[in-house]
Structure formats: structure tokens, C-alpha cells
Image 1 (cartoon, rainbow, N blue to C red):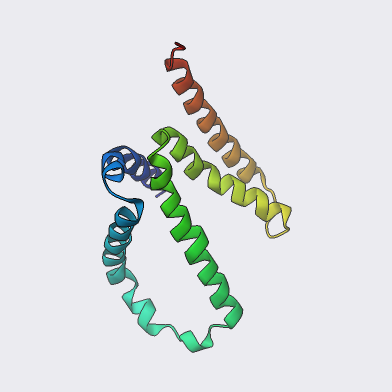
Image 2 (tube, rainbow, N blue to C red):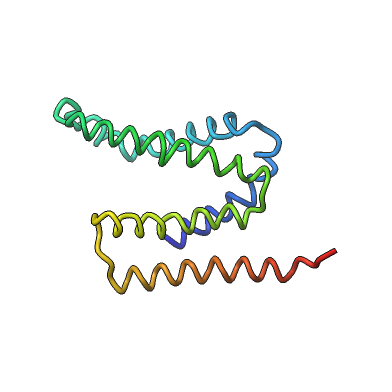
Length: 143
């Protein structure tokens, strides 16, 4: 699933750059979220209907709202906005480094513990990002 996610995100960055340049970010994301809703609704309809929303504590509602607004909507609006001004490889670095940063913050705040698997995963991600940036920089010749 992670490999599929990486491949589809890479295709998204490459294929949709002309579309993002043509339309506003709000228009682009409006349609992206609409189609995402249409694709995910059949898979989640049963859970949406069966959930007892009154039993969800107020604190949890605020936390879910925070995740929806900041970690989803704002983050997903910033990706196409950034694509208008920077290369897709730089935008993808943000996507790949996000889990590393989230893991570091969760370990720092005491919500998670460091394991050798996390260290290896972080090293692989950072190595890949460095490799891609160096190979891209080597191809650019100074004027």
C-alpha cells in the first residue's frame, strides 16, 4: 500500500501540474475532494450510519476537527499551491518527510518510543530524499 501510495502521489504531482497551473487551487481541490468523497462513500457508508455520534466526547470532536482542518484540508491545499512555484520533486519531499517529522514529534512529546525499525525507516526516507535532491542538483548546470 505504501508503494502504491508513493507511485500514485508521484503520478499526481507530474500529471496534474498543468491542471493546477490552469485553475485556482480552490477549484482544483474542490473537485479533488468531491471525487474522493464519491469514491470513499461506498466504502465508509456503513460505518458512518452505525456510529453513535452523541457518544463521542467533545474533546475528541475538537481533535477530529483539528485533524480535518489542519492536517487534511490546509495541508492538501498547500501541495498544489506549492506546485505552482516549485518543482514536483521538492513538493514530494514534503510528503515523504512528513511521517519522519511526525514520528520525531511524537517521540519528543512522549507519545511514542523510538525503535530500531523507526530509525531504519527514517534513515531510508531521508536517504531517498537526499539522493533525489543530489541527483536533480547534479543535472542542473550553472549559467
